[in-house]
Amino acid sequence: MTQKYLRMIVYKWVLLVIVAILANGCALTTDYVDFEYIPEAGVSKVDGADFVEVSVKLTDVRTTKDKVSCKKNGYGMEMAAIISNDDVTTLVANAIEDELRNRGFKITEGSVQVDIELNKFYNDFKVGFVSGSAASEVIMNVKVKRLDGNINYAKSIMGLHTLKGVMLFSGKNTKLSLEVALKDAVSKLMHDSSFIAALVKEAELDPELIEQVEDKYPHLLEEPKSEE
Image (cartoon, rainbow, N blue to C red; front, top):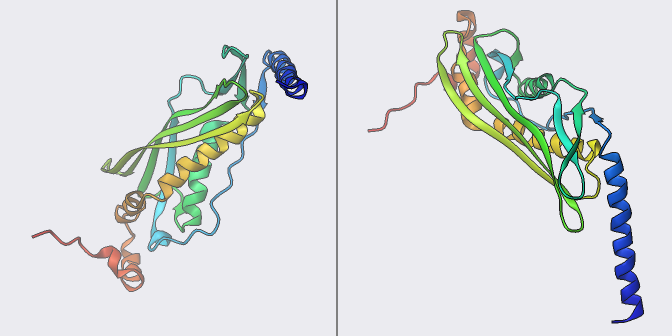
């Protein structure tokens, strides 16, 4: 084993020790995070969406509302909390409303309601040999229902993202990972054809609009063909 190789090993371990010391020092201080959601670009309008009024109602069923992660020491022990400066329920609801609006839906108190239960919005730091990772999950139960309570769509949506090569278990890395997980969850919902179909099919249109729908989107009013 050459002296050059030995020096490289020593340098590597000294660097890791310094990082660990700095990380442990910071691990005692609470971090605060400001989240941002950027809507998907270049989306197309949904046929018939301009006639549909949708309301989005979100209920936060998480045990802890503001804590979105926690720092850890080199042994994986939980240390100081990482707190969201934003109201997470508003963040998620606004993200879904923005995506629906961009697809042509009218966001208001209408005949179709999107009910969402937010079950998880959390990042868990994982300790590795050389570097760690930030594993984030956003889980929500989504229902589409009419004002009469009829439900024709119900599904659990899970957004995931793992940020690798993490050296510091910080608010910054929590933000980077959770923002992608949120985008993944919302994207899965918006690209679920049965979700979009439920919004359009269950809308109670004003009778005065029926003729407009028939002229512009006649296929939306067709009854599904029964299988022989």
